[in-house]
Image 1 (cartoon, rainbow, N blue to C red):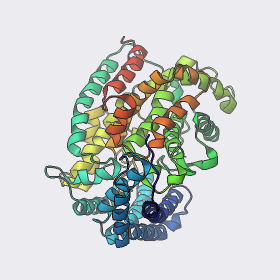
Image 2: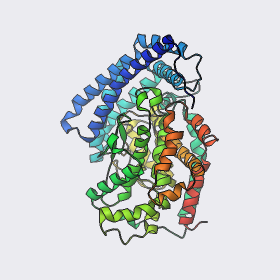
Image 3: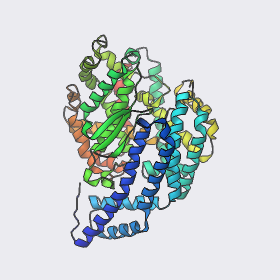
Image 4: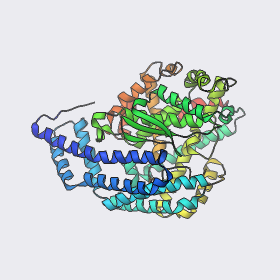
Length: 514
């Protein structure tokens, strides 16, 4: 890592003035994040309408503060100040990324930003009710409005020649990502995954799924997953774990991280998997530099990198035999003797059984990315006008039959299962798969760099992995883009090969296919 310090009073003043202005604007966004968390976890039903207005006002004020004409002057002065500095030093990175964000933000009218925030708040409330009632028609008008507003946003931002509206939106979540690039990754990956799934379907050996169907008290589950989050490294002095309809990780800064999970009585793995997933996000946030809060160097590199952290803790750690050698004895502390008849092998098999299903966040590693591919194609088609919103449930159901061979019984377990489109987050979903690929590639490198890394999991030792991630990923902020970071840390471009090696090394023996 290269660092630099402003070496003249003029340089120092230009940078500190800009950074202070940006951090002030960021306070409004971080406050809005807390109101969004409250809406999903604590807010009474009657607060929905005014909450939408509150979030709309904060979005407008934050946007106006960041796009004020004086901000452009401050950025220009700061660019001159860092002109002689190494391009990867913290100050230069901050100025570069602030300029990028400013140029994008100034293309959006404040009225559109405010309307999108207000609509997203109301749409999320409508989504919760529609999902509860399994009635897409209750959510349809809000999704139509969110798609329309996102299309307006994309048109304001623009996209490269030969691209499409989806590209402009995806750039917010993963810089420079395009639908064409995603397609070049997804098409061959789907073929490789389908080949693996076909082999598994034809296997004579079948792992036990009994633990996934075993009822355990939700109150005990809640204590268990909280303990697991703490043991792997989530700092509860700087964070919380609550319940919501869809698990997420938010908050306002690295010392105030808000996670949520959800529970089902008959499958503790649902809560454990989602909690370890969100803990991965949370530990990434907690690993960012508090001194840089509100600045690019105190922010995550992008959602693909963010997802690499959550997917790694959920899968490479939480589904491993090493983890369960340590975790199995912990069950008795939370569930008494209820789980005693399940062996270590039973638990490991249940954590890794491949069973095409309906719900993305509950899916196994081999089928997970199929869920992401379906959503990517659907949101592209909605934006491009190739899919009428009213037809979404039917098309969704058909794709689930085509991709996973499952029949969708209702909207709740179909097109209403994810919160993203209610939030107005279109262009987000492919980052889950890109993050899954990066997780496997980073973990391969961590195993090489840290002798005995996985064996430490047997003893509940997770600090070496978290320390490695702090050093190689978390501390970098937005210094590098996805592929730059991947090359820097692993020495190779992002590839599906490590993930496929991970899946095949685990699943083929489990199904007797070695």
